[in-house]
Image (cartoon, rainbow, N blue to C red; front, side, top):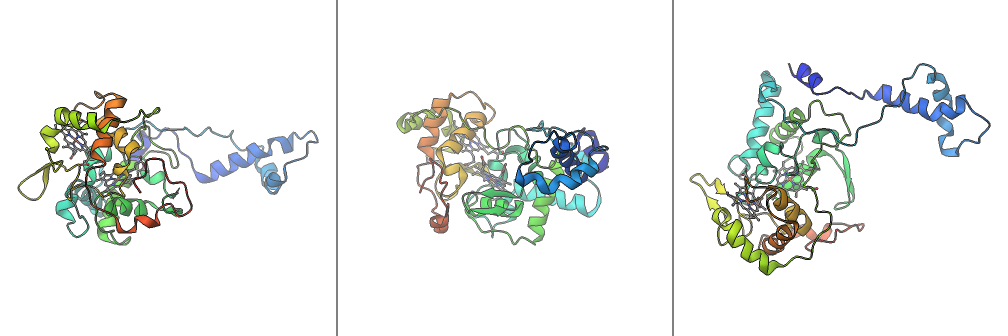
Length: 312
Ligand code: HEC
Ligand code: HEC
């Protein structure tokens, strides 16, 4: 059943062999019809393969820059052990504090920021995420697999501890993200990936941000930014600062990231009603309130590339 759903969402697929052949043929075009031009040295080794495949290979398909974001139908979660893992992963990311207290130092869930189970554009969607990792990240100057990226959010956004890469919990989280990503071509980011940065960042006014906070945010996130705790240590509204919030090394601690998140997603249910300036004023206010530290922050950006809005 998952196969048919992935086919219906995937009019274009990229089998590696076809792609390699097509690329080779494309490169070889000038060789076959060659008019005596000297080939660039770097391309020369492909020549033989290219000539062999040239007559039958299809033209090089143009890879889309982004793929339309479409949340899968929950009915497509398969029966059996894989489906069980997908459902377990969904529970872990949406009740993270309660399900994984050993790994979560604050009061948040993954879905406090990755809204609606990671299915919302410009709110860190996970649809298509399995196809865009591994990825090189300047923050640790390494190639990161998806599990590394998940653990980054455990240590920073959740102010907690990483999950062992081979744990049942990590497997479940990856299974959930894999199900979300079904049908999205490998290597193609989803539309609305990340948090849609504001293109021309205005100069923020944190004092105005404080006043706005009192008008637009305080009803849910509270005067002390501590949110509102529910009966079973779960939150009704999550904390924006203090020890139940994300730590200083989290992406949300950065001005540009926080402003973008708030611009498109807050106040909850009224995303898009704030101006760029208001989003920056608010972000400048709440990101600089007291929050947990991160012991290993000195190890970040070992080879440079520190963004302009890093907090340390
Ligand atoms: C306080 C907010 C917050 C929480 C809570 C949070 N994250 Fe994130 N997450 C972010 C930010 C910010 C980014 C960086 C997005 C960007 O690059 O623009 C991110 C990025 C990611 C990415 C990579 C997304 C991409 O497009 O490259 C994954 C995967 C991820 N988070 C998983 C998780 C998981 C799993 C949890 C729970 C254990 C979690 N996050 C909790 C804020 C959060
Ligand atoms: C109607 C209640 C409500 C209002 C008003 C509101 N939020 Fe939120 N906010 C939430 C909820 C609920 C979440 C978590 C989403 C979830 O759990 O699905 C959230 C999440 C967040 C997060 C990410 C999680 C965290 O705790 O860091 C930030 C940042 C945030 N809100 C900022 C703001 C700002 C700034 C304003 C004012 C412009 C605002 N919110 C107004 C309800 C609200």
